[in-house]
Image 1 (cartoon, rainbow over the protein chains, first blue to last red):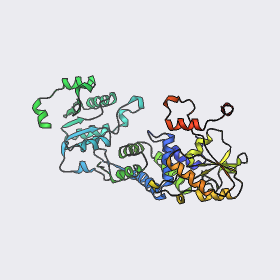
Image 2 (cartoon, chains in turn brown, yellow):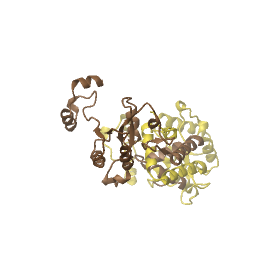
Image 3 (cartoon, rainbow over the protein chains, first blue to last red):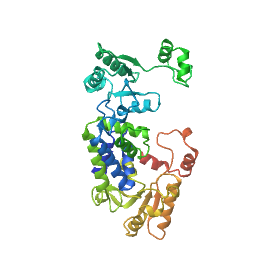
Length: 206
Length: 206
């Protein structure tokens, strides 16, 4: 693409560094901003740089928070013996929106992925082990994505926990509520049969 | 969506004001920025605010430019008697990339669209008429999108040109090069038959 303006080229280049935003989309977004009142760009720019420079991560669970300890960790209503291990804040938001979980979280900040150069030392794993060592946590629930990277990360943490007195569990994998059996993939269907649950429990959950 | 941080919520909100970016995508983009070095956000923020505050529009053709008169208008190699009327800078870039056009441009900044509250006074039409009145321009090529809004805008400008000595033309509408006839829509196909061209001209163009 040939740009008539260096400023425009620069803005499009920086915008296209965002994931899923190509050069054409970046140009569309930047031209949109140019058409809108100057205020809108200023608000966007301010919000982004404020977030990046002033963002806080909860000292306990590593969730994004405006305070030193996040609202969830600080709440007296939550069960402090239960910790759900997740990849990032989006997973916290997803689980919170179910209103089914009353424990705490631990945000790893990613998964172990040799392909992308992410090793255990890049994740928030040591603080998790230390958290368990303090003795308050009685159960860790692994809630990472069901991919090879997720399984590797689960297993790595599980190994690190050896000798510590803590129960571990993983969220149930199975057929989604509302799904038809014939369209389910065979791995999921197979696992859902192996890990079947007493019917009484299913009645209680619904 | 419930956010654990006001800063995050704000950044996501501002990001989701961009066209085609929903709340979920905005969250994904913002979290991506948080994972990258601070530098990347700073570069993006700087490029956007620099563009918005220092952007220049060419005094002659209204194209985005870093100088008072854009490169195209300033070039001695271009045919100054020919002006192509386009909607925005993307159209200029598209036509430039064909390397077929050696005239100048006039960027309107949009199309007349009562539905979106865009009237002739919101567009760069008066400067176009004044440009024609100066006498150098001998032909205006209308190259707006082939929509109702584009046609309305073409016709409005055409009416404003009454009494002025300038030829007007519009880019050819027809079957795209490489397209198969059976898949063409009937309006385009009909027009391409009505506006057929001498075969010798087609040979010359290819």
